[in-house]
Image 1 (tube, rainbow, N blue to C red):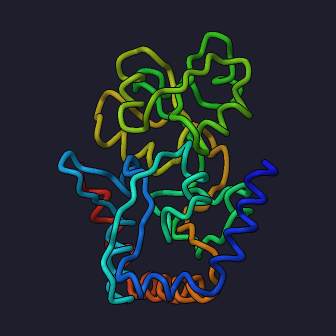
Image 2: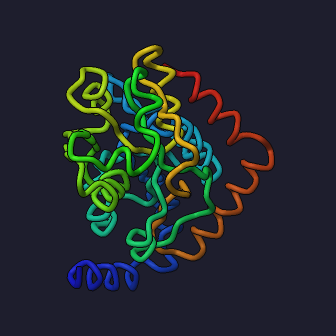
Length: 252
């Protein structure tokens, strides 16, 4: 961790105050995204990206009069790629975690969510609490490196924890009976259940397990942060963000 902190300090000194100038000089907004989290960001088989956050950064780039350049990353590599200065902004359903915020600023939250379980529909009234999930006979599956794995390791020490290779096929493990549940963001639970009717369902929990903010993660530059926050406020006030989100929710 000390290495990361030192790397961050050096990066902050080099970048503060000039990120926005660099974006404009390069004519490109570098957007880091995992492309595996509907409805925020998803990479199609042809390599193109879709989703509510992708629509948003295209509008941000238009505001800056620059092009968008998508930079692929993965959750377990996200912080390292941030420190390596591979992108100017990271989007795609990113949870504002303290460890991430310690490395650089987040813009205003675009979505507030909470962890909930998704299970086979036959088990929707079985895994209804943390204690019901945290049992030796329960198989919990997670994608690697993000807030889901952090949450599972913190709360399911007695359960069987399986870290699946990616966030695209992870839900197939539950549908196929190789895992019993995944605890993830509520929006992902609902979107996945809609895509697998009669197979995967939200567990009938009395209340969500957490409160999490989704936000865009920016390179350190107060000027860039202020511009993005002002732009986000306009997008929310005009209804543009909500329209992008609603449209992305309708995509399969």
